[in-house]
Amino acid sequence: MSRRSTHHVDAGRASGPGAGRDGERDASRPRRDRRSSRWDEHRRARRQELTAATIVAIRAHGADVGMSQVAAQARTSKTVVYRHFTDKNDLYLAVCDWVAAVLVGQLQSAMRDASEDPRRTLVSGIDAYLGLIEADPEVYRYVMRPPKLDRPEGEDPVSDLCTVIGDHIAEIISTELRRQDRDTAPAQTWGHALVGMVRAAGDQWLAARPELERETLAGQLADLAWSGLSRTVTPAAASSAS
Image 1 (tube, rainbow, N blue to C red):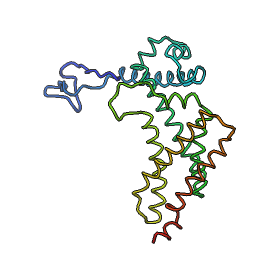
Image 2 (tube, one colour):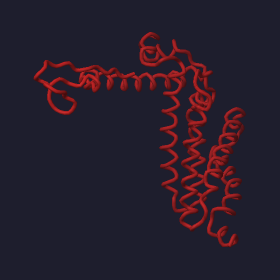
Image 3 (cartoon, rainbow, N blue to C red):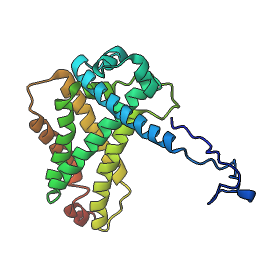
């Protein structure tokens, strides 16, 4: 979305890298116009403001929020919204980016606080994911029910979100395996399997809303996951395998 322009100068006044013979700037190497750079920053800031307004609108109107409601929340017009986002899909992807950043940050913080105890780390990570569902159910529904995207196959933003989380979990598992001087190859499988399990259980919890506290659900999922991880990742598992 950035605009690039060639900065024209009079012959004999051009200097520095890119200047051609007789002081003329090589036309194949356009120089960035400072005014254009300032507009790029303005556009980025405006996109962030409109994304934040979209999230507030989702919370108010639900996952099926319309562009008119987004524009009203931002106190602008749909025309202005479309000036900064190609279409509704582009806005959807911006919300996905926001959710990914928030969730991964919460996961990292929760796991860092519990890093001395592997099982507590697992519980904290699961609880952070469920915490997003509990605190922002409509935003979660919005992200997990993407519109039909006119994009190449394999570029599903929900998969991207889950991939980011799965890769983060896989790295934690890999670090532990590496510390034990063991093969780290299964880490990716185990990390993404954990995310799939928690997502499926979280979706069911959100849909049914049973009388089940978030902390209890996190503990139940951790018990199930730990039954496998304690037999594959812990030092005791390494001893039994050797």
